[in-house]
Image (cartoon, rainbow, N blue to C red; front, side, top):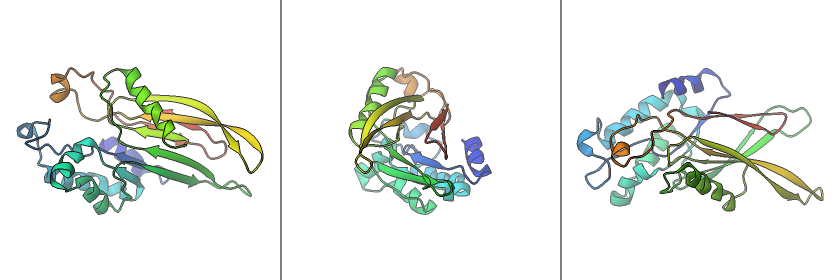
Length: 219
């Protein structure tokens, strides 16, 4: 994680989003084992503030994960929102549409990408089931990029749809990128108890091109 934070901080045109499960927030009523946790939920919040503070101005937005939801559901305290406030980052509990605009294209308008992101939810253990759940986001909102994170498995695929351009009286092809992000925790504990497949750890990098609207995904 620290390597990725350093990577983001190294150049001014690198940014990130935090899509939930930043904190474990184990409680006596949750799945996680509170006795094997290194930090309390409050300690996790303080540590997250510390490690993300150097790139606070590069975090575009945050959502809540099912781990943070453990406390917000039972006690009404949203630690994900508390973290977003301390980092001065936009927060949307269940999901959001993010508009990314950048570049200098002369007389043309700046390049724009739309991203729909939500922490996600699925009980599927197989890659196909996770991908199917991700694909269903296309039925919720029209976007260039879709991001979910819940299953901790790196998945990336693309599709194309045709969208009416009513202003110019034509139909244009729209390429869409679907992302299921990875995780940072080593395999073991709860994941081993439930016989979950070990995750391919680390983040995924999306390179958004300025001239031609094109997304490159680095796994």
